[in-house]
Image 1 (tube, helix red, strand yellow):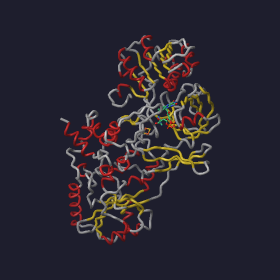
Image 2 (cartoon, chains in turn brown, green):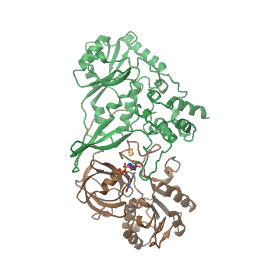
Image 3 (tube, protein in one colour):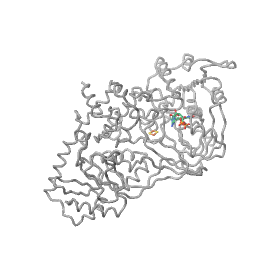
Image 4 (tube, protein in one colour):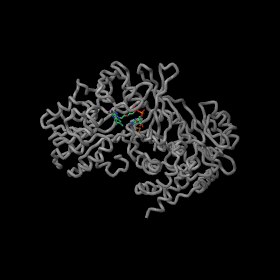
Length: 289
Length: 344
Ligand SMILES: Cc1cc2nc3c(=O)[nH]c(=O)nc-3n(C[C@H](O)[C@H](O)[C@H](O)COP(=O)(O)OP(=O)(O)OC[C@H]3O[C@@H](n4cnc5c(N)ncnc54)[C@H](O)[C@@H]3O)c2cc1C
Ligand code: FES
């Protein structure tokens, strides 16, 4: 073991200056942002990756990229990112007070991405399953897939939300459903009087879709509890663990594999995650829940 | 360059070093020992058994500034370090530093740690007084063996004289003041060898019943062992074991305003996986909610996860955690021996 010769090392903790370009509330607790870097040098990142967003004096929080690199000039280039932030604590609450023009900081993108451009998905049927805020990173994958529609087989998108008031990207859901060979199914856990759609947890949607288990790759994004139940159902459908991908949320501080907060057993979810192939973590204790 | 020097020569040399960059060295503090800035050679305690905190604090300080920010959203890196000498590091603490070197150099490298590390000159000191809890011998870390990164090494011989060896260019520069001292002859080198043999045996206040390489294998099968529940149930989640550990490096990051609120600093502070909220996420989920899960994580991290990453056991046998734990559950030797007993 020899210590590498001293060389000017980039400071991986240094945020780059950026500005808030657009702020649009989506629900009572979630706000859509478009952010713009003030200097060149970053890349957009792929679906499933995340950025560390700084509100100066408050702190930093990992937030998923919700836009797609396939939409250059429309939120997907190397200086703009779209995100949705739920108010959860200090930093996210401070983000909710941001207005267009405000300065923030960005680091990243970090982490692994959904296999949108690989043998895992190209030419195959895709089953994309989003629970709650999981739709935010999955939107990036959906945009990517729809922009390269011919690269994939049938696309089925399942979206579960707690209640109709919590639904995100309502307009886009309708647009996605219009795309050729795309099915979008939605459910809410608890209905309101004006809701005439499906009611029930997300697994109740699965019997309503046709899944060719030999041709299908599933991508899941949602809370740990959703994974437990959806995995059971996917196994019943005969989907192998090697064809199931998911994003695991952890407490993340540094995003560079040092601080230890995101550790899942021996893995650092900020570096070799947050997106994992289920086969690779199925036997890792602590991974799901 | 290997010199043989008397105690007065050593003190005179250390005094001459004090005219240069800061020297940090073991000194007496409230009946125990601590690394601190050395002001005069008389304060140097080369007979210390173990320091309260390990010397990692000079590379990963308890609190350090990572980035300076302004209210308007300007950011500036705070990577900075002046040359310094870390004098009198016991071999097991050197091993821990070298492990942190490897971890912080892993891509993406940590410029804050590495810059400080490159600014340091490391002087290792063979153990003279064995502490109540030293067990580095069983882990092969009682003396500097194998390929380690340090600049000079000092060993006190039984007759009270010292052998001083330079290992790098930095070490040779540091030992410039000893240029006129005699080279160490075969006798003093043989005496040094004896010290090493003695220390490998003596630093075994707790006896590990297996070869250290066996630890990762034992852990691989021990996820559901009852010991985690038994001992974890007694844990106060105070984090003392992590704070005194030379190989622990988990940290927290937070922003602090300067007076006037026009600007401030993003600071990194030590954190520990034994604290209850360490793995909690927004929405109320905690990935290591139980004390047993956190207790287990610590031993897996020491005995397996770091091994998987850099091929070394992240327990060096300093015994600090054993002394720091109020619940009396932190002895790694007890944990690993128990797993060995229960593994067919
Ligand atoms: C890879 C990844 C992608 C994410 N994407 C999004 C997203 O697109 N939109 C969104 O709204 N949220 C997202 N989150 C969650 C978001 O990072 C947390 O809500 C946020 O960090 C909480 O910080 P805070 O300062 O607002 O809360 P705090 O005041 O710090 O604490 C509130 C709660 O959040 C927990 N927490 C603190 N820091 C983190 C952390 N870094 N990660 C997770 N939990 C934490 C605390 O333990 C506490 O329970 C993502 C998290 C990860 C790991
Ligand atoms: S977030 Fe710090 S190690 Fe992953």
